[in-house]
Image (tube, rainbow, N blue to C red; front, side):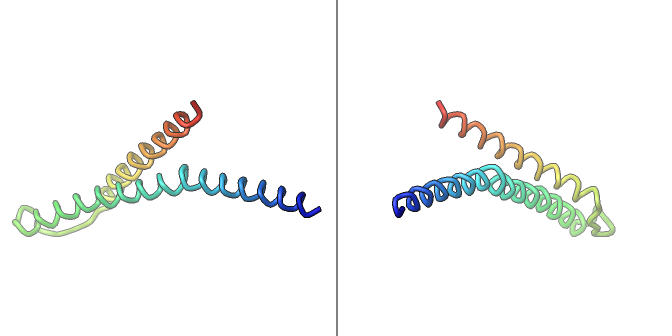
Length: 95
């Protein structure tokens, strides 16, 4: 009876570990990379607008909705790049 319980526990642990690995590789890693891409794009836009305001080429320092949408492009690019990279690593491990 005890051996059956231990075997079942091992199977559950393997399944849980595999689920955590898949969740980490295909959700968390791309999400972290995408967030980094958003922050990078937004920082560049923010610094550029701030410098142009300080130099005097712009009269008003304003963050517009277009700046956020351009930064969203950075999120999408890095998210997809990391997601595709995870699929590539998964296929390499199978062979």
